[in-house]
Length: 302
Image (tube, rainbow, N blue to C red; front, side, top):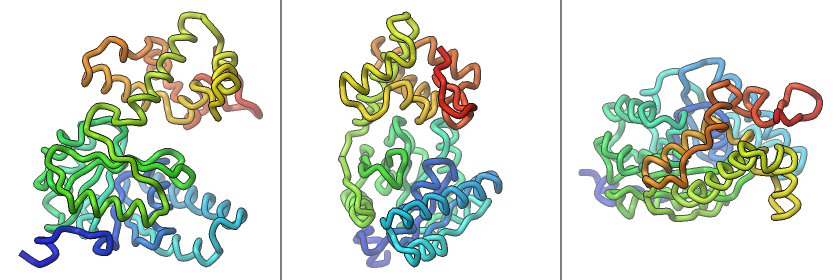
């Protein structure tokens, strides 16, 4: 064994980051990693998705420059540090890999199984999952001790929290290495145990689901529910507006994980949430959810 593999990673060891998935989470993670000075390789199954991710990253970096959060030189350097590829196995040479694919366990398992034969002995594997068991995902790899949850909040360049979730086998050097990355990003880490939903979504998603039940039962309409929580509880976004921002398919997937994993009826997804997802009304990303975003101003759909 090399000295590096005996000691495990330290924060200084991690120089290169591989990101699986070029959606809103993947491109946001690539953005903050590149600004912090890491060399990033991002992959997706679609070249269009990769092109869109780079365009989004450029727009967001330009916004940060205009607000004097970063310099033009910072932006140019960050964009130079991000490479894209359609070949998943190209990520194997990186020090740290963050999977940010769709919130479906079978998809994530297939990604890790494909990656494992191409990894270096010290590569750390992580998942940006918002609810799926880290222990179970790690068990499908050859390195459960070097596997953990690395859960960023959306939008990644703006939100300061990162949940770090240890599986049953995650070792201390792996946790410390990921903690050092979070600190280098200038973000704050919250350590969560490996239970369904972790901390944020264990609390947030049932609140959103209850807001959907409130709509389903006719207690209030979309606008009154959101206004009530914004003005009555000082929330910056109403729960239905937030659900649209997150994606109703993601909300439903997390509620199903909570319901299945905790075996408690209080986590049963609202039938109206299921209906919206079945209709393809997934929120802002498709132009319609609890609000219709296709006009000049969002309009409630109920």
